[in-house]
Image 1: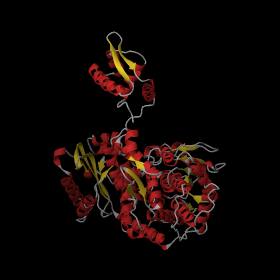
Image 2: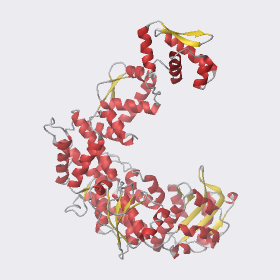
Image 3: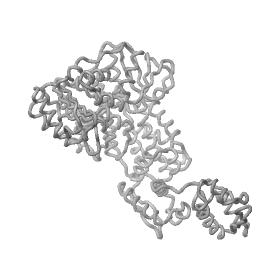
Length: 636
């Protein structure tokens, strides 16, 4: 049990133990009042009286120590010299308790934790109650054994899923991994072994997915070493390659003492492998998956075409990439494997329309999935379809500069950025999008240039660094290396006009009246018909049309306008769009069926102006000419 209840009380003891010290000197050293020091000294004296010593006071020298029992005083002195660890926060305490339970090394005694952590047993009992709800999500039971002693019981598959989610959500994965399993093996060593197996077998993977796979694989190995076997798991309808590679991985990572590896463990490793990797799209039989994946893909692509009112060019490469992703996604969703999309917030900001479209498409396909499709999974699908849509409308065959793209995120995100580069620079051809691990294994680079979406060392060719989802200004900087600067498309200026530009005082409109007024103006000028306003209101009721909580973009559910027009409403003092959310710029979008390409330009412009400085300038424009001259530099 910790004897010093506060760090200050411990520090006061250390000062006095080194020699007599006055109350005033202690107050100055601890940066508190003398009254506080008096209270601390009283508490310290009461505690020391029970541990072989007492405080004594001398008017000249101050407070000192009278040692009554050398052994007990030595123990007190020894504890004062230990590094101070502050009492855990509630979240840290529950996380530590969860780790102790997941270790499954006998029972966890709350009485022992009370003495060791210096936490009341009532708080620990409350923590157990909360953790019971958490473990219930995995069908794991927290069973009581006697007085405040607990252990976990449940299915081995549930334990592995719970441990995986726990470590996936932690900030210090390597440290918490060691807390659970001990320092027997580092995740970095597991990752090295796995990457060589994947490369040797010509499997495709991203660095992000390699991290997920390493974590899941490491957990399986550690559980097996503790003789926690999966004995009833079966993974069928899979290419034999997965099970061959899975068996080889288990044999290398498990020591020779494990003489026989059950088929169920090989099947589980094969399932995990197929959840994060894919065969190369040009490999024989790469598209030979079950009918469900084809059905999901075809529905998704048909949905995209119908929503965008255009013939989308789903070339063979795009279909294979998307099909591989959907296959792996179904394995993850149907087997309860969580992933984290580090670019999700940026995807929602830069591709809001694609995100909504993808979410709607997959809401109609829930019967193909056992579990719920997470926002993170939807985000990866957005990047896939975004790359396809970019390719459809911005491909240029007159390419000359060969560029290799390297990213530590998904292949889809790298392809999406690649298409934006091609769109801005028609002289560029992206030869391949690979992971950092794959790049590190290349002896030389055959392409003219490398564009890295992650920090990367140069080999024999120059490397240009960009963020994972670059802003327009960052892509513009490539022009000095790739091509001449391009002028903004004329079509953009055609969709803005003085007749559809308004500056309002705060008191002139609320959100509802503004939508009605702008819709009426669009109908009066022949841009839309009577179906436009109901569709805008339906979309507004479905979800907020705030973009990054900085501008509002009210628009209908589809491309229902007669002619494309962007109506701009400026509120220099702001207008409340959602409860507690005030914006100064509102762009009401009316986009016709024949303006798909330009709708992409419009959305690019809207995401390009989301910086606070830009919004400040645009919201203070005095007239339309001022506004359009400020805006043109952000047209793509």
